[in-house]
Image 1 (spheres, rainbow, N blue to C red):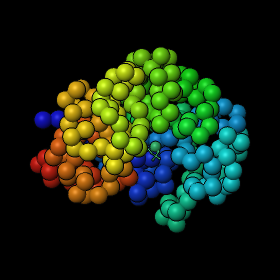
Image 2: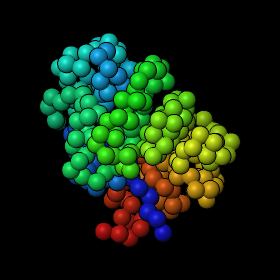
Image 3: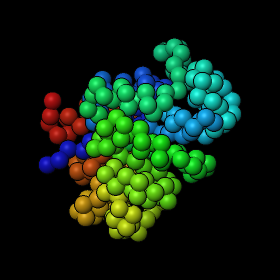
Length: 247
Ligand code: G3P
Ligand code: CA
């Protein structure tokens, strides 16, 4: 039996400031199989790790990521709701994360946040970094922008890709194959058990997001889902150990 893998969503976003190094380090500490993060481009074309198109929600700044130079962005505090617990932290570059990952064996799901702004060159820059750090076999590139997914496959067929989607797709495993993806990353709302089973049977991995409830974790583990993407990797691991009887 293959055990369900656990991907820490924006790091351990339920317990640490999302998309920060301390959040990724926490995911590693608790034994997650992988981390998920979001990337966008700064005004000077650097690949940075942040979820929203603006810095408003997760930092003490205001405005669009694309309007900031990297050195300006780096001055912002991205500890947001966790500032009392963890103090000041900042927005990492993808390069910093990849550098840190040289010292561990985590998998990395890079979500290209290019559905609102297309960020020309984001795919090329992301792939160049992944290759520079020899991470081709540890990275999965995902996006809600499926044109971008196909573009990535054409640029780097050796790197796994996965379309993200929120609404029901008819036979998503057929769709995934049509765009050369080996996995799908659906919202759990768009992933009933039958779809998960059929996809896995067809050789397409399924990594639904965002799985934070114990009951949902248990049912996905029992189903043999390929992976879950969760804000609470420590909790997910404890439940996984119980379900599978592993230590
Ligand atoms: O990759 C899964 C999930 O992160 C996609 O949605 O909005 O949390 O980036 P979002
Ligand atoms: Ca994401």
